[in-house]
Amino acid sequence: MTRLIMVELDRGDPERAVARARQAQWLAERMDHMVEATFARALGAVSTAWVRKERGSGEPMEGGSADSMEMADRALRELRDLDSLWHIAQVQLYGATVDLRHRRVGAARARAREALEASRTLERPNLLAITQALLAQCAILEGDGMTATAHLQTPDVIRPDHRLSHRAREALAQAEELMRTLTPEDTPVPRGGNEGPT
Image (cartoon, rainbow, N blue to C red):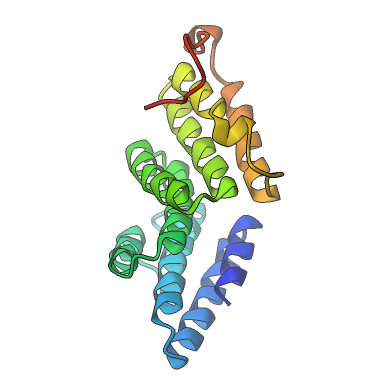
């Protein structure tokens, strides 16, 4: 059931993701699958934050709250206690996406960095590519084209272990499209190799 939440988020339909998350959490709790229940709760909170952004913060939403990302962070703390790296990476990637929609660049970068660490431990090429795309978007929104270019030229992106998923390719395409908003002065040619930003 939690996969269906991610499908709706990838489709850009956070309202359906909220509904899927409620169903998934209820089912996981009934089956005593606490990791999946916590994961569903975290994704549901992220989805709620996305819905509130689209509706505008002043419009009330049933089951929503102004601190929905804080609710996601509470669930994340539980996932860290369970050492569930794949779930942590997924929540942080979707959370970073929502933070970027709110122009909370610092928060998005912190989430993406944790996702990057988890993805490297897990050796998941698709997650690595998505993370580098989000980190590039953070740099672009701050007008730092050099850092953005470095993220998009890391081996995670240009030499993945296998063909990237649609989700990963889409994230990279979004970053590359956003790069076009920068001026040439924002994107000087990086010196040295392509080991990526630190």
